[in-house]
Image 1: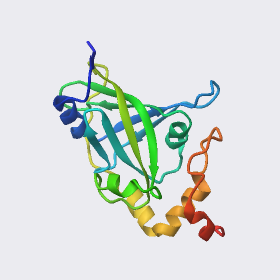
Image 2: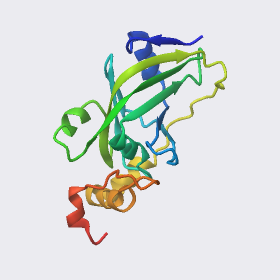
Image 3: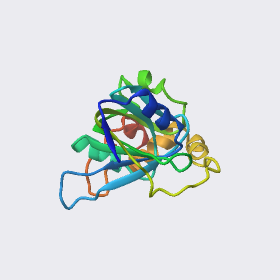
Image 4: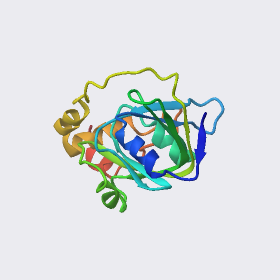
Length: 192
């Protein structure tokens, strides 16, 4: 049976830190907007900051739904599933905020993570509910390794190319909500 916890205790923290994959769920306020679920799993990009706060390094990608939804309403849930070992599912519900690479707070938060090419923000979440459940319906799967594609891609693009990518592809969500619509690099990259 599932259980609700007052905070991320040491047992849950150890479980979370062993997982190689987690899922992020967000939604717009609009009833006809798209609910989003995104997988995350780059090594060195997730940290439990304290018993009520976690964060991850958000690397530039093909979409910007999580950022757009957090900017609009802050609601977020992340889920960790045990795909090996004892079955367990942990959900962290909270209110998230986006600290972009151009914000003053970014550098101090980024110290919690490995340096990743194309890093665009740190997502910080204040946890309001922590729960786990049995996970009996989650299949057993073997981890073969991380895909080494995203880092080299943005490393080849460099700082300006990564900013250009965000300008071209990450300004708004699929529902037209503001995401990475402000990028100081925009003025110098108008031709991209």
